[in-house]
Amino acid sequence: MSKLLAIVTNDEVNTLAAGHQTTPEVITGECRKCGKCCVWWNCPLVDPITHHCQIYNNRPIVCRMFPQRQADIDAVACDSYRQTGL
Image 1 (tube, helix red, strand yellow):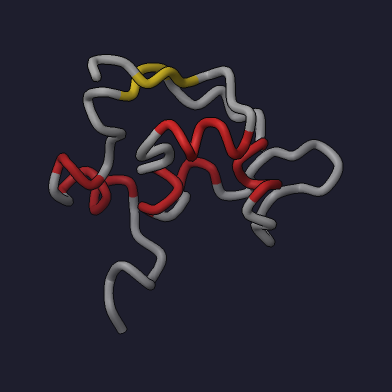
Image 2 (cartoon, rainbow, N blue to C red):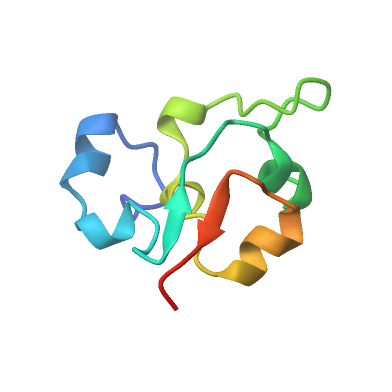
């Protein structure tokens, strides 16, 4: 099974390419764990009442990479991130 599809440890995530674990330089801000993106994507791992991710510390890479562009920020009405430098 591909390691990207398996559960990975924090150490394994940290060894992946740096560009694949952080948002692009033109996006500023950080996750406040509000759950807006999780709810928007209908993630099965988000608690339906608190909207908190049940595996936040071990969340998949795709979650760690969010957002990639202004459209992502706008889609979830996230006020934690800003797109700058364009």
